[in-house]
Image (cartoon, rainbow over all chains, first blue to last red; front, side, top):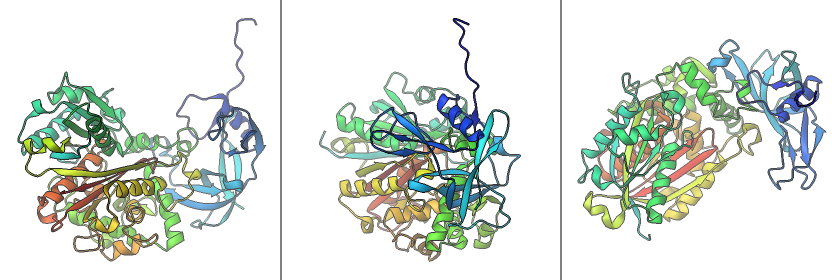
Length: 143
Length: 386
């Protein structure tokens, strides 16, 4: 196979992909397909990143090590999207939430499975949902 | 260059759904309007800075060049500036810097956007892509959505109500109805505003700025040359800027814009004034909650008091601080690249006493606050009669 670049399978994160996939997102999506939310941490200054980064934005060290994120989260803010972007028109209405997680980490994701209007401060859990063989999202559910 | 930089001219196209006009015609209209009360001509302008946020709306790549040609400036230096919705003030700051550095004495700042040639769903998509396309846009959070997140946090923390939000929209339409350049010139009642179609809960149609076409222009020069252009120059007294994390989920606060607070402090310090000295303000009310947060970040009101103050009409003419008495982004319209320049145009008019039925009596010092994306770019500018 000399001269032929056998690329590994690419995994995609999110409902849509707007930019050219990079190994960082593919790896993140692969872990998420296995049910694990994996952030990374700088070996030099200890800064933690979720989502993971390619290098440390604080000290420019490229040596980052993965860690598994505790999925517990507190709802900081939410909205119900009624008028959606073109790519999401068929999904509306949907709830977009910002969750606060351990060590000051947090992500934006859909909040699903709630029957009444969510309440800021409610406890949630970040879980993975496989959309396709190679595509995955994380979403919040009520804890 | 130790002199002050002053504004010696202003022009403004009609904002709205301007069918049949592309960016070049909009640019022409703004500069034509500028020349109406300008003692000199285009030959006395040495360079331009052109602000336009996106080329996908208009279809023209590298769009500054086509406008530079249309306004008769081909051959002179130009530069395209982009900072999302803060593009217009970024262009003003760039021109200010050119003059201060001594490159040119007199520079045109032109802000333009053509947005209505695409559908609202498409425009929503294009603007949503100014969110983090790797980690946050893939969840379909719209621009109203990001500000709705702020609204939910503000309501929870401070008890801000839907009625307070809607009162901001009512004010915008009250003044927009008096502005012949505004996109929507009609009054709206509080109950209409509160019961409009939902866009991104808790924001509805009357909480959201308009998708508009339009252009605005100002001319900057050195103070010692001002008299050649006008008898009434307006001084740029201070400019401050700030930014914030790309991802909303990484923000320290969801009830305030850190970049706006930084920008305001810098601008106040440079101008040697404080919030109580401001007679009239233009703030970036892309959404009603944005105006409430802006009036707090600019320290017109204490944190959490922006909502009650809006409901109490403290931001009307005659209140503590008149805000967006041109109709704001909500009623005047929000052609992205034009907005920051339009704010400066309006403050100039106010300080000249030329704002007609919207005039704040005796306004001497004005402020504009222009935010890009959801706080990733912020510029605050302070202007004075002297």
